[in-house]
Length: 362
Image (tube, rainbow, N blue to C red):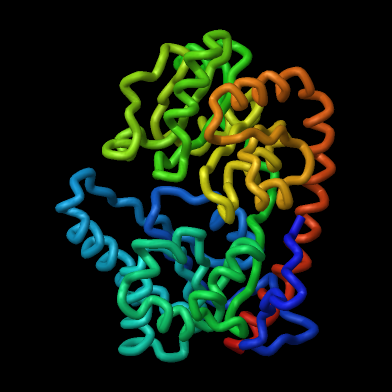
């Protein structure tokens, strides 16, 4: 459920664009959504509602010294899409900051009438991205700055992001496609029940060491850490992982969905408060119990259907996983109720935003 703001800090509402009573949602204006990542569930779940053309641009070089060339190639591909499509509304997933520079160059030089929507993930407002020159000023020139929860809205306001351009829009909860044949995936990964799915980006805020320690303490449990393990280099030591930890890598969506639907529970952990984990929404979409970090934000966004654990305590993680297994029926029922509630909340927020955007380009 959405957070409540302190009385002296009202949550900002969208005011920059006009609203109307009706709109032709069946024939949306030409829209392009650029995301410089291999895949992001949030953008995918919103695509059918807003009607944009979502493009994941996924080129990635492993060596950091090649990163500038990666951005050059991504910028070239993105510019080609913008020139071909000439969108009336241009969405960008933030971060990274260089994408923001690119779309403003496009708007200034080639398409002054395009409306810019920045869908800002939590990392947008943390180093290194928020420290890039001019990022705050450019965000304030966007037509809409979307943030994913009320806590991040207050953080953005504190950094100087204009409240009248800011819109809170939670992640959309949707049923996911069932995916591949689970038996085939389970055989390839040698899964043994009970097993727990832990989608990872291997960022610094993820307690990977604690997960590996938990696996050592509970050899009868299996932990499946999806995502690209090469990203752990320099942040996490995966060499001490016991045999009951599986690293299948970055999976195709169909295989990942198969794991989501069949996990004993889906685990979402972060050391930081203010992080809205997309995996929790994916678990809701698949109707699976959750084991989540006991941050204040996650407990307020997901007040039921989950067991909450201290992400820095391996023993607590083991206990939480065992509790999720033992109380699976209760947690599954709670997830279904919360899923329906969150779906209605999302439509209540997204409807006025869609009206305002569509009317602004008519």
